[in-house]
Structure formats: C-alpha cells, structure tokens
Image (cartoon, rainbow over all chains, first blue to last red):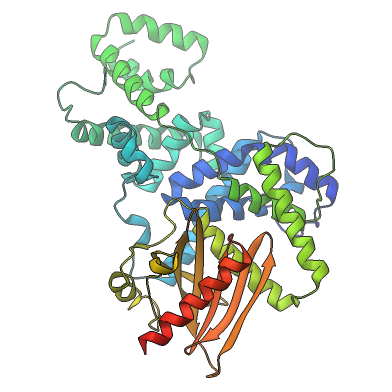
Length: 185
Length: 253
C-alpha cells in the first residue's frame, strides 16, 4: 500500500466509522489468517495486528469494498510476520511443516471427508492456498482477489487453475478416488 | 467452439466470471462436448468440497484484544451502540472496568504496566488458543527436556496435581525481548500461565498479587527464578498456586 505514510492519528469519529465498516469483517480476517498461518494462535496475532494496521491506514480507505481491502492488509501482515519469523529462526522451516489442517482437534471429530479436504488445502503451497481460500471460502471475485493479492487478474486465473488442479489431484489420492473423481462424496 | 476453447472456459464459467453471452455460448458448446461436461462436474465437486468446510468465527478473546486496541486509539465506545454480540460486549466491558480500576489504583508504574500488558497478552495466547501449549504433557520429564535447546536456561518443572494445579504443558514466549519458558497449569476450568527466568538477584521476594484487565497477576522471586503468573482465577487461588510452586522447588533441592 503506497499511501501509508504520515497517517493522521485516528480521531474518535474515524474509529467509530472503522467499527462499522471494518469490524464486521473480523471473522473473515481471522479465517483468512488462519488458513495462511495454519496456526490458530498465530492467526489471532496476525488478525489483531492487521486490524491495528487497518485502522492506521483507514484514512486512505475510499469506500471501496471493505473486505478485500482488509484481507489485503491481513496478507501483508502475515508476510511481514513470516519474514520476521524466518529471520529469527533461519534453520527451522516453521512455515512448511506438515499440518493436519487448521484445527486438528475439532477436525478429528467432524467427518473424515472434511478433514481430508482441510488437510489437503492446508498442505498446499501458500500461493495456491491463498488464492483458493479467497475464491472458494471468502467467495471473492477475480477482481477482488487481484486486489488482495496485488497481482493482475490473469495471474489470479492461472494460479487458481493450478491450485485447483493440484488440490484435485491430492484429494483423489487422499480419498482413494483415482478413477471415480470427486463427485458423490 | 472447439473443445480447447470450452475447456478453457470451464472454471471461469463456474466462477461466474463469464458475460451472459459467453455463458450462453459455453452452455451450448457443452452439450456437444462430454469431456468438458465431465470437467465441469469435477470442478463443481471440488468447489463444493471446499465450500463445505466449516467457517470459523473470530474468537471472543481476539475481539476483546481488537476492542482494546480501538479504545487505545482514542475511540471510546459511545454508550448506546447495541450492535455487538452480547458476549463480546461483556468481555470488552470487563476489560474496560478492570483497566480503569487498575489505573485509579495507580499501583503500576508505566513500565510495570507495559510488562503486565505483555504478560496478559501472553496469557491470552494461552487461554484463547485451541492448542495453548507447544508441548502437551502432564509429565515434567517430558516438558523439562523440551525446553532444552529452545531457551538458554533450564526452568524447574513440576506437576502440581496434588495441589489442584495439574501441569498441562509448556510453551516458549517472548518477554521483555527475550525468549522465556511458560509453564501452563490448569485449575478447574481455568488456566494459569507461569513465565519464569533466572533471577539476577539471590534473595527471594514474596508474591505480589495484583489485578489488571480482569486478570490476576502474581510476581515473585524464588529459588533463583523470577516468576510471573497470570490467570483468570481468583486472588486466593493465585496465592495457593504461588505457594505450591515455591514448596515444590524447595523440596526439589
């Protein structure tokens, strides 16, 4: 975001406007952070930091779609946190650990299928994961996704196609549907 | 439309990004192209599987933390704005009341206040989380070695089940710019987070118990360790917890 310098200190009017415009999207911010970080604790930290930043940049908000605007800040916050984490512990590839999905305890109790889907999605590389989450879970349009990820729509489409292909392949293996495909599950 | 063309449109169609005219042309082509019908069904199935994943809303404690940030930014809530979920309001209100009580008491200097904030945030990471500890164990012989290589000292680890505070596990946090050990204990439905690191002074200091933001804080020095405990238990439980910690450290020598 280019317009983040010399942010005026938010006055109470601005904070109130922020409450009504951005706060309703806290669930989305947390959910997206959760898929990005794959860690419920870290996701809270990222979402909180993103809300603080969003308030700081809120003076530059021009009434566009609020959710993509906020999710873009979530993603930037996560990027910064990841860079910092890598600098702190260069030997531990904390990001690329295998994972059971966003919430192993709960997932273990819900159906097998959902668990497999969540695990397969969580295991995708970040650049596939984020675009799929924004499209299928956040239900954003290509244009909105392009805003969040700060890339051309054409790139969004090719990444999305790649991500879907990879996820479908992984899921067929996980679910043992090599021949039947993914229907009627 | 040849198959390569309709194949390239399958996902865009499914994503609702084709114009009305393009959609109509695609649907027409689809009737003559079983391979692309198959692709569309498969893509639809994948989308359905993802959309079926349960959505998760932001935890109350995250809401409370954000609420606190907004308040700190100068936006005290107007009195009549009943738009928030009740639970959230209650949490935010209790944080506010506790914060102002702490203020009026004037017991905490600014530096201490910041330390306490840091400790309370650390506690929230424990209490608000689905996996509050990095090493889950009630066995001190599992927890203690886990810290080796992660931090530069070896904290005393004891299970206090017989005192009513079973050991749940441990985690690493950052306090005052340094990596520290956090031991997590349970007490009925509550959790206690004990942050401890080697003291620079030898003499013991008895527990000083205070309240902040609706949480109980205890700080003391014992057995060569600085102790900071945070919890949402009552002050008397915190007192017994500190006593139990000191007693087991003494009996260990």
